[in-house]
Amino acid sequence: MLRLGVIYSITTMINRSNWGLIRIVRLAAGSYIVWNALANHQLLVGFIGGFLIIQAILNTGCGAGGCGITLTQQSIGEPAHDVEYEEVR
Image (cartoon, rainbow, N blue to C red; front, side, top):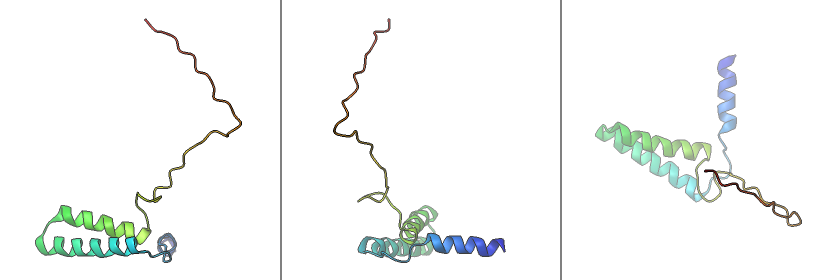
């Protein structure tokens, strides 16, 4: 039962829509890198290719709004607060 729950959560985590050009390029580049890493017995290069494949499958990555970091802004009507500093000797 636990195994089916894990498989279901992984399949729901994989977004099968929104396949754009960059996502396809990541998948193709990662697959090519992993293939060459296996052929040339280079483990570190294989990890880099695997990272690209994971980014493509899970649709993650930083850049062009992929991180989702939100910036806080003050409202227009709210005045900025004055900060008082003390000199420490």
